Length: 278
Image (cartoon, rainbow, N blue to C red; front, top):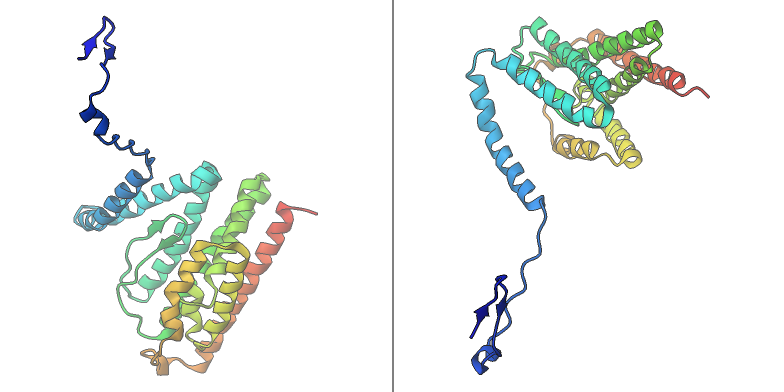
């Protein structure tokens, strides 16, 4: 029989034959750590996200709430690794880029959505109307990098006034990101511009993207490439309104596109030299 001591310790008499024949209890499960819980919470959050966005659209000032909320989220994420001052400047430069797209859409009478920020992928602004011609689509696409280039130049000017390396780093990042956006591939801005010339330019863009992925192993580049593959290998009919674009208009857009690429490349080079003088 079992008795209990003063301190609550249990003492047992020798086990009977029946007790000896019982199998040993199964060892306790090892703790699985927090990852299972984190994964479950993430899946639940993703499932609820679309309902949250639908609910936001019904609220007053929905566009302002959506843009400002995703901006603050991106700032918080970038601040974790970049610091608060750089994160704030970086997100503002992305906003200026997207507002360039929005301005061009409104200028052509196209309905534009609110800028939505996605950490590690930048931001996007939806075009709710179909462009009338490929020239209009190209002008909307290139307007973002043009606005982003202006923002990078402003940051560069602030560096020469204040001599703060923060502004020079922002300028260099602005030159780099806007040049990347002009890569002639997929749904990047450059991919939408060069459709005005020839879809064969996408082959050049695919090679550039592959080389950048080989050098950086960036998961973002891999995802962009994967999402663009159906458009690269799929059959494409002539875009509506393509016959309305004159050769001089195509030449003018080519001049702006390649000129902007060259300017951004030069900005990257000189800002890099100032950041790391040899």
